View 1 (tube, rainbow over the protein chains, first blue to last red):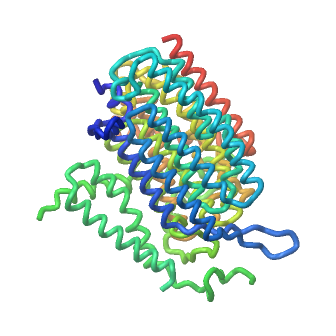
View 2: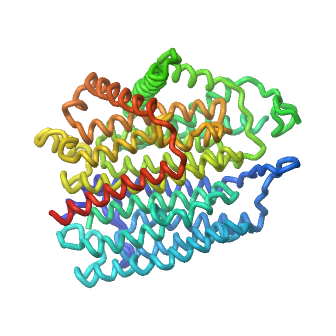
View 3: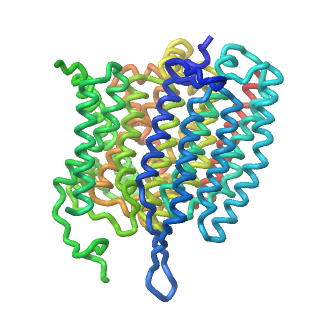
Amino acid sequence: MFLNITSVAGKFYGYIPFGDIVLYVTEFSAISFVIALFFTLVVYFTKPEKQLESQIGGFDRLNYVSLEELKIRRLMAILCGICTAFAMLTGDLFNYALFLAVIGIANIGIVSAVKKEWVLNAAYYYGIIAMISTLPLFGGAALILAKTGTLSILELAGKHQDLLFQKMLYAAGMVGETGVAPFYAAKAEMFRAPGAPYILMIHLSSLLIVIRTAEILLTI
Amino acid sequence: MTPERKSGMLALIIGILGFLYILIFPKSVLVVYLGTALFTPFILYGIGIMFIPKTRRRKEGLLPFRGW
Amino acid sequence: MELYNLKYVIDALAYSLYAFLVGGLLLGLHRKIVARIQGRPGPPILQYILHTLKFYFKEISFPITAGNPLYFLIALISITVWMSALYLGVVFNTSLLILMGLYVLQKIVEHGCGLSSGSPYGKLGGVRSVFSAAAEVPLFTVIGIIYLLTKSLIIEDIIRYQEIHGPIIFQLPFAAFAFFVLLLSKAPNSPFAIVKDKSIVSGYLTEHFGILESLIMIADGIAWFVLLWIFLAVFIGPLVVSDPLMTLLGMVVLTSLISLICALTPLLTPNHSVMIQILISALALLDLLLRIVMG
């Protein structure tokens, strides 16, 4: 039954029945879970850097991140890290979509405390795209449920069904939510904001999610 | 103690504790290998910091070759 | 108390030392070939390893702008990432997907290096790394194409598939090309190496000097070994990978090919580099969809 899972994600170590949220652990998900938690810890302990800004006709200026700004951004970054970690483990398509949506919101939250116009603009555009792409994301999950009667990845892995269109919708939702290839332009400006550890979390979450989505789409 | 020396000492302690752990406890070979991957850089950094020459800067953040 | 695990730890350390030495020599060879094509004598092949040793004993001080402990941890993470990739890929032959996940972490390392130092050059290098990640990540569609052919992503299974059906490079030439571009983008002085462009000093490495640079160079040496090995294992198969000497030969040939390309092509601007990579990944995606629809 688990042939698909073991041939994509490595050894299958078992699942954790957690109410109706079934988490399952494979070689791939265990390693990514540890990575996400490790980076969350690093983010928690790291003080933000002070970016050096060159000035015309004067001395270079240091850009500090104030304590209030730091607190809300650190909270958002840690939320984002925890969501990423559990998105790696979850065995349910709907939960995964929910985690993705929360990561999108947390990503906007991380940069929205920065008082710089271009950063806020970028966050706004990214927010619009993230909101729009929740439609194909949840729509894809709903169509998979309608067609197969289940959202569990463990259940879907055994059957061989023709889910091409649904998978494409799901992938499109993921692409918009994490901001890769066609949509990253909206996101790139966000990475120039000061506060390295928190910005790093945005990048880490989206890249891990891309890989995990590839795993899910190949499995089901 | 300079912050560099301090980070080196911390890394060395983490590395040695980590190596002690992976030498004694894990049963799985994969965990031993991945543990080695995790803790070797800490040891490398800790040992390296012990060897670097004493810093010549006068104040924190002020490099000796920068004009001001 | 018996130390059963001591043997495994020594094995693991020996493997990574071997990988670093081979990778370092290959990167030295890369510089040499590029120099000879451009009509310079070039540094000795040993130079990469010598540099690593030299930087290991240099004085460092944390810049006042740096955000610690990310600033020095990122150099350690860099080594951890590639040593894990070495063990998971070369030693245990696990899933290709995990290796791609670790390749993605390399992007995180570049980004973290650049941003945590607080230097404007580092920041530019980091932002460019994000740019190119947006283009390189879709190249992972290659994984989907391979999965459709072999019905498995475990490297062991892929190698076994090639024992029966011959090298995949002949069956999936475009996927091999896309993966080769991924490999090329990691090479120093390649047309896609926008993160280490000399117009932004040293890119993300600008503020990581002394022992931190040495650690990152160790990681890069191992990374070069691992990436070449993955290409050889996935696309050419047991013909090369089953024999260590043949693997070395394959790596030298691949490195020479990449050096030739690096020496003869100019560095692209960030926009062009990203556009070309997106074009290739779009074609790979098209290839994947075609293969799914055609069954």
